[in-house]
Length: 269
Image (cartoon, rainbow, N blue to C red):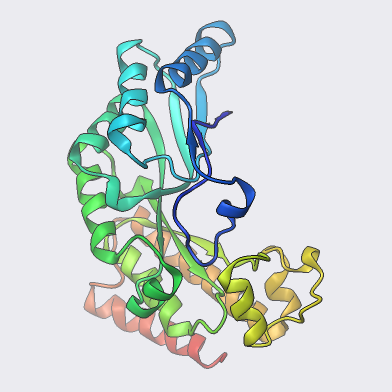
């Protein structure tokens, strides 16, 4: 899979993200030049899979991603396209969803983070549960299968309660799409870094190697690590249910079973 970067930076200021620190400002490449690059590697090097790694791929879509997708379609570039970074769900209307489908987008990861209204406001997050629902419906309308769509759920934020994390996971599951857990990693210069310091979840002289999300939970102690492990297990169960066409959150008998599991998680606090 070949990585493609059509823009740099992000104008949003989500409290957990350091994109604005890494790339100063927001800059876009010409849609035509992006398509030229894709076509070159497609026709001359046999590349059949491309991954867009933009932080804000759908921003100003009518001047950027839509012309790129139209160019891919018109030049008959029959490749597979992937979106490993979270897509801004509110930008996905039927027009954009249709062009994504026709251009060959195969893997879709939607940015969601949380279903908690207060947390959304605190994080400056840009996607609500209703935005996620509308994006899912638009994608399904043009041909995408719900079980092929994933949404990022952020877990392990400073002061984040287990109930919030579980409810956010269930909000995704209710839509019949899959959960992709995004484990929090505190980054210097972000508001969540400052919040973690204020809550004394880490020392001011924290080793940055130990704040990476692959080890951050372990470094916070056995209880936090066990909690994250249980959330991973729950996400696997919910995602397997999606593959089977079962909605655990809506089926009354199965909902009782999942609630018992959630209660076990709550005892870990």
